[in-house]
Image 1 (cartoon, helix red, strand yellow):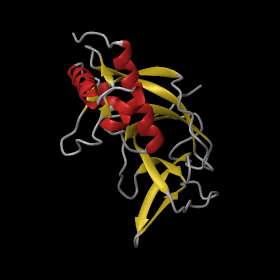
Image 2 (image 1 turned 135 degrees about the vertical axis):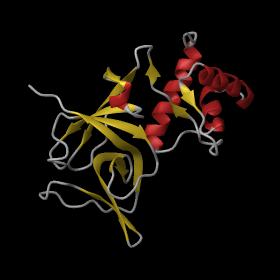
Image 3 (image 1 turned 90 degrees about the horizontal axis):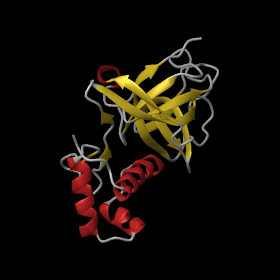
Image 4 (image 1 turned 30 degrees about the vertical axis):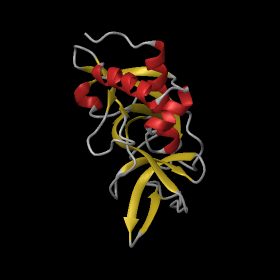
Length: 200
């Protein structure tokens, strides 16, 4: 089994995760090194160790900003995903990004999700209802028609269906009571890859 993370490795992993959610793209090596006041060479050793321990991935073709936090998996084929608070299914508001809890799911259910968000609001009914738990994969791109978590303008976040047509991009609610969201700046934070509905 991989050795536990050191305090520095845990801090780097948390920084990569939070910076990706805040900015919509992973941080560069230089940004991470500057934040921790270490050299890029020293950082590369830490990244290599985190990759070897299976908690950080480096997809091919995106060396500069290709870091991706990998959900920890146990021997029983389950994943432990962080629950990062709530995201509005209504008017955009800033998503709560502190880790509230963790959810353990079967790997087949979790798919390739990186974190969980709790739905608040009714703009996505009947697709999603207040209290649903969304399984979200970190992503900066999505296809038209996919459900996404996106930031609108400067820091506001919402969950909606992404639409693209005639060179335009907007966010669509499935509840007809809510208007579409059109903004000069829409940044995709993640793709919704699953949903867990809690009853009772």
